[in-house]
Image (cartoon, rainbow, N blue to C red):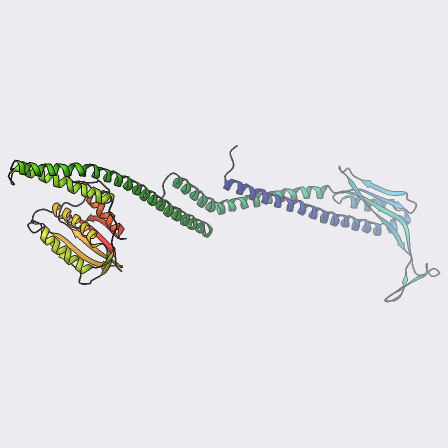
Length: 467
């Protein structure tokens, strides 16, 4: 069986509660009103009986049936009076008038008394002591009685009308309460429903979605707490994904390191034998130094040797020897090195060094290797007569160096991939240069990232903490 929605259950609860309270008040009200009206009606009938008894005093005394009959008929004209009976002192019926009224009848009885004069009671005068003095009690004599039987049919009809009106008012109050509560709870239920919808969508994978604050202060606080929880979960999820990715990357790098080390050792010895054998052949057969085939072989042997060295350095970078390095001295050394290496290059290297000198903890030889690799790539990527700019500056406790070329830039979407091992866009590249550079910078607790400049060339940024 399908459970009712929260709004329906709360609305039914309010309607039932309101209806129960209204019903209880109806019953209590009808009971109180009925008792009050019955007492008042009985008092009125009693008053009529006493009034009839007073008027019947002389008629009973002289046994004037005609006069008594007239009084009984007049009283019978009152609504709900069913029977009027007048008795003499011996309980004999002097007059009896009645009419047919269905239903239960009630009776009121009053004595007909005669007041005696002072002369008649002279010998039997009675006195009574009171706080106000001694008072003389006049003599009374019962000479008959009056009985009136009456019906409460009129009151019953009136109470039926009152009960119906009470029921109508109760139904109206219940409807008004239900309508008011419906509009009041609709905002709450709407906001809660939105939260449920958002939670379902987030559970389906839309982690960036957040809940609307709603219209009520309570739901606004709930939505704020819910969004705060989502932000916390999102941060935890991203941290977990980052740690998982880094762990997987570390495992992958470890495996690649083992593989690289194994390949380098397996290739290095045969390559050394090949180089030694070729040197022997050149001496044995007097091969000229400028022989084209000889140069091809030597170039390929050197290229393979550099490749093996990269494999070995990536697989086992060795211990990093940190020392205090002054940034201006380091850049001057790098500038002199580039002037020597790229003396005949058509792409000049322009150094824009900051006047402020900073001290960093670094392994100069490894850091030089990082800059050599990036500058080499920038020179190769720049067109002839282009310029490679090396710019340094310090910011937020970090020494930064930007290396900017005027080439085609980095293809969009691969800015982070270029630091992965064996990822390369060159036909002859190994994909280990930038990976090794990134690994060395991370070992210095630094940062390294790549992007494109406004002019379209690539920009590599290296940041090392200042001590």
